Length: 223
Image (cartoon, rainbow, N blue to C red; front, side):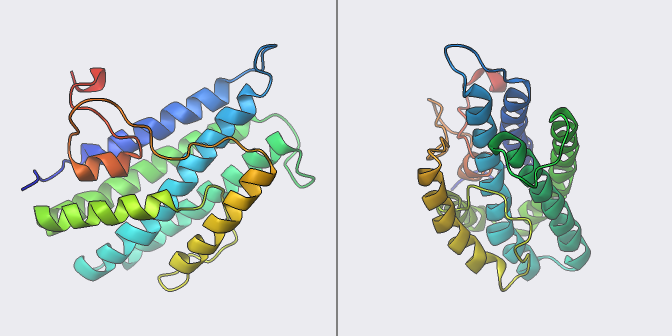
């Protein structure tokens, strides 16, 4: 039977997101790789879009079923998710020449994104801690498999004007996932096709899939 995962799984997930955000934020074009800033921006946007959609589709429904008095928590996380998606859309527009993209430098938008990611991190810690306290190890393993499956087919772009509701979110995420992949192909957009795997024994199933990049128990971060 799997060991109950620790709350550090969420922190690990956001370590990956922070690393990708920092890489995109600091990227500069070079003669050898003039598209490097765009590629790294796309990588972060895809990872973040997948993560927040999967949390909404997998963790929120389970929280509503198992946890008492979750309305305020869910509403706060939906508010954060909307702000994250609006900011991602603004950042995306500055790289792709959107006519409605905000004028001025990108750095203030990246700074706002970093702040929102920290806020999202804190809210997600609370949610996952309560779920881990309420679920058995077997239930957590089942949730892990579900998370992994949904993560693979989640949208790769932000959609801030789409509904965030228990009944509509899952269906619109499926629609946008298909549409996003078609647009990615047409735009020749380079995005990660699956979570990056690190060699070695995994910490736990839930940790791996919440992270979005499976982490080895023997990796330097665990020493």
